[in-house]
Image 1 (tube, helix red, strand yellow):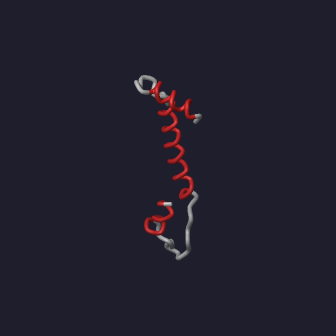
Image 2 (cartoon, rainbow, N blue to C red; image 1 turned 120 degrees about the horizontal axis):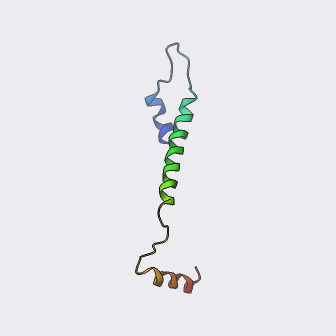
Image 3 (tube, rainbow, N blue to C red; image 1 turned 180 degrees about the horizontal axis):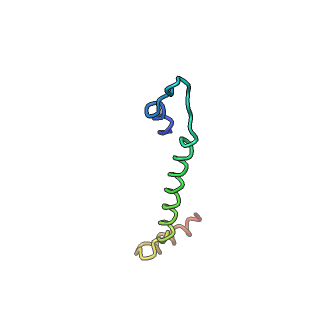
Length: 70
């Protein structure tokens, strides 16, 4: 949404000839940057444990979760 909000401010609405110009790069660049960000995020997420193995309260929390039926 921020990209859509800033588009008219950052990119002139009319080119030198007075016609509106839309480039395919306006769509590809955010998708590519977002794809790189998601890839890096998932790569980093895969390196870490999602369950806190060495947490001293982990066992008691899991017991409470099972006791309450969640």
